[in-house]
Length: 458
Image (tube, rainbow, N blue to C red; front, side, top):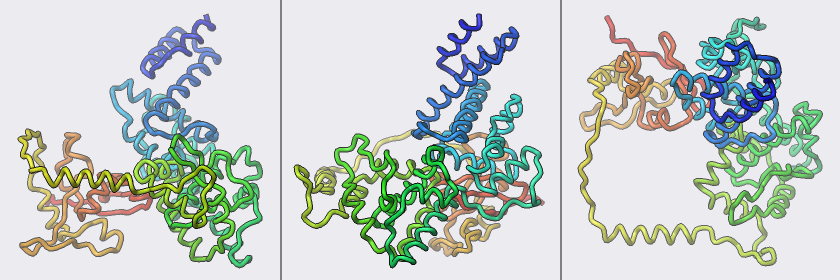
C-alpha cells in the first residue's frame, strides 16, 4: 500500500490535488513518516516549479535557507489556492527582491506576516519565514532576526530592533568593497593577487563549496554596480572568475572576457571609484540576477557597449567584427518616424468602468497643506509646481486600492498625499506599506519611512 501511495504522490501535478490527497491520507491514518516525507518533497518540487515560473529566479544550487523559503512559499501558495485566494504579491516580492531579501523584508515589521498567520493556522509555523530566519541566522541581518524572534515569542537581547535596515547581502557586499578599498590604498590602486577564497575569507566563508553561491551572488552585484558606474568588473580582478559568470545565455554575442579582465586588473582603482561602486550597490536588490536580467531585457545594447568598451582600439578577435550597437535602433526609429509623419490621429470611442472615489481626497490635500508626505519624510522640498489657481499640485494615493472594493478604502485615513513622482513609484516601484494605528510605515527602495495617517473625524 505504501509503495502505491508513494507513486501516486509522485505523479500529482497540482497543489490542490496534493492538498486533497494529504487530507485523505490523514483521515485514513496512513500518514507514515515515509509518506509524510514524500508529501513534503512533492510540495517542494511543485513549489520550486511554480516559483521559477512566476518569478524567473534561478533555483539551481540554492543554499539550505533558500530551499526552505521555496518550501514555505509552496505550502503557503497551496493553502491560499485551497481557500480560493492568490499569492500574487508574494510572487511579485520574490521576483523583485529574490528569496533571502523577500524573507527579510516580509518579517521586518511590527505585525506578523500574513504568511506566518496562514501557516500557523495550519500548524505549519515551522515553515514560516520567521522560523527559517531563526534556523539560519547567518543568512539574514540582525534586524530581521530580531523581528523573527519577536514574532515567534523568543527573547531578544534588547527591547528595540537593531537600527540598521541594511540587508545581510548588502552588509556583506560593503564589507568586500571596503576590503578592496583598503587593499587598493595600500598598493597604489593595484588590486591583483587574490583569489575568490581570499574574498570569501573576508566574510568568514571557510569553504566555498558551501558558500560559493552566496559569494558569487555578491560578486555579481558588485559587477553590476561597476556596469552602472562605467567601470570594469571587479569580479574579474580575482585570479579566477566564477564558473557561470559572463555566460552567453542565448545572446548573439559573447562578453569579451579577456579584454574585460585585462581592464579590471590593469586599472589603478581609486578611493572614489570604489565609493561609487559601493553607492551603486545600495540601489540593488539582494539577488544579482534580477537587475542583470532586467537590464539585458530592456537595455542590452548598453551592456554590450560597456563590455566592448574595454577592448583596445582596433583590436578584434579573428573572425569577429566590432558590434554595430545602435544601427538597428536608429533604423527602427527612422521607420517609425516615416510612418508617423504620414499619419493622422484617429479618435476611437472607448467605454470604461470607473470606481467613484468621492471628494474626500481634496479635503485630505487641504489638511496636509498640499505637501508630498514622502518628500516630507525624506526631508526634501515637499511642494510640486503651482497650478494656475496658485495652489501647489499634489495627488491623493489610496494605500488600500479602491479597486479591492474594501469598506473604508475611501476614507481619509486610507489616503496619503504625494507628488506625481512618488505616486507613480508607489504603484510601479519597489514599494511596500504597512498600515499602523496612526501611521503608514513604508519601505521604499528598501529604506523605511513613516508618514502620518490623516483623520478628518470630529
